[in-house]
Image 1 (cartoon, rainbow, N blue to C red):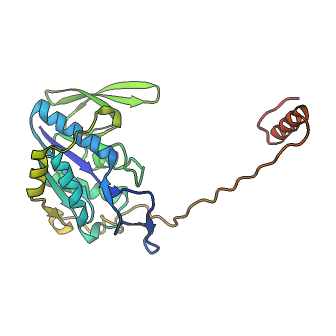
Image 2 (image 1 turned 135 degrees about the vertical axis):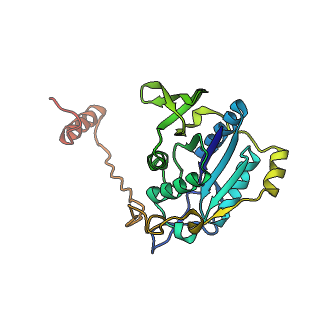
Length: 264
């Protein structure tokens, strides 16, 4: 069983600066963490490995410092990790990111289950999982809260929907995105920490992936951030005068004027 976990290193703070030229996050000088939703993806990958045997490969696209995140996931159960890092990948939207990840996964050749977190805390789009499945030409299941069984080339999962759960059976290979209800991520072990320190993490560049540079990074992005701003919150208040009855009548009149309530 070959399990691939896609993860991202994200800023560990909401206080970030924006590059005025590219309208992308300035990550230098900011403490970074593994995207919290991706820790559940990794944990589930490790649990599948422990239950069915196999190997967990973690893949992340990012700048050189993203190697820290990959060493962290090795300490918590990943067997190996690969960093996709090249200046050509900078500024990628979800489409360009998915294209790069798909090329890397195809380079691995053997994969059965690809697991992603539901979304990242810096983008919150939740688009990489489905786009990745589309580019690989394999099935996709979102919001997975439990993996019930894997057998004979199929996987049965439970996924969260608005009014309950659905049970879906999907052929392998497949891509799933998981929710935090699926498990509780483990802490690093001493053996894992030692393995992480000595691990050799290969770096795959655009040349090694054989990608068209017009399909990755900012050049390959179908969407661009045109402007970033913080909305102004303006609050208007009014104190109603008079006794309690007149205040209530005034409030009702104002609610009718605003068409929040109707009637006489």
